Length: 296
Image 1 (cartoon, rainbow, N blue to C red):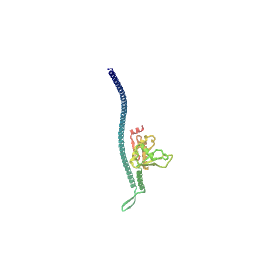
Image 2: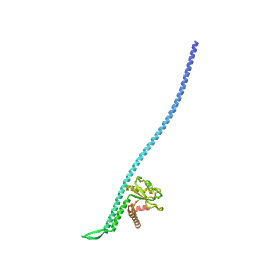
Image 3: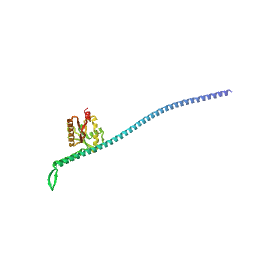
Image 4: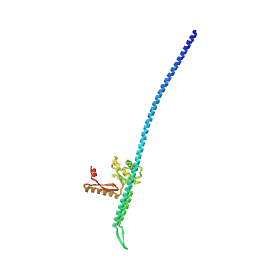
C-alpha cells in the first residue's frame, strides 16, 4: 500500500516537474514571441516612417513637376506671343520698306521729270531743214542726266546700309563681333547676314564710323525700328544708328534743317521742325500746344 502511495507521489511529483518544465518552456517561448512582436513593431514603425518619407518625397516631386509643366506652358505661351510679335514686326517692317521704296521712287521720278523739263527748256535750235526744227540738247543738260543716273545708282547701293557712330575704336578690334553684340543688345535678329567695317583712314584723334551692309532691306529696317533702345542703355547713350545717305540727300536734309530754323526765327508764334526719315525729310509746323509742351 505504502509502495503504491510512494509511487503515486513520485509520479505526481514527476508530473508536476514536467508541467513545471513545460510551463517554463512556454514562458520562455512567450518571451521570445514578445521580443519578436516588439521587433516586428519596431520594423513596422520604421517601414511606416520610410513610406511616409517616400510619400512626402513623391508629393514634393509631383508639386515640382506641376510647377515645371506650368512654367513650360507659360514659356510656350510667351514664345507664341514673341513669334506672333516678330511676325507682326516683320510684316510692319516689310510694309514700311515697301512704302519707303514707293516714296523714293516717286521722289526720283519727280526729279527726273523736273530735269527733263529743264533740259527741254534749255534745248536750242541749231538748224532748220524742210520746215522741221531739229533740237539738240546742250552739254549742261547731258551732265544733269548723268548726275541723276549716278544719284539713283548711289541711292540704290546705300539702300540696305546703316551707319553707326559713337563706338570706341580699339586696336586689333573685331568690328563684326562689336556690331553683332550691339544688335543683340537692342533685340535685333542675330541671324542677319551683313558685312561691316570702319569707314576712312585710321586717326588717333577721331573715331571712325562703322558701316553695316545688310543682305536685304528688311533687316536694315528692323534695326532702325530698334535703335531707340540705345538711349536707355548704360554706355550706349552716344551711339547712333542712321541711314546711309548720299551727298544729295545730306544736302537736302541740311537745307531743310536750316529752313526750319529760319522760319522759327522769323515767325514769332510758330516753331518749325524736320520730320520723317532722314532719306525722306519734310518740314512740319508744331502747334502752339505742342510747342509749349516742348518748351516745358
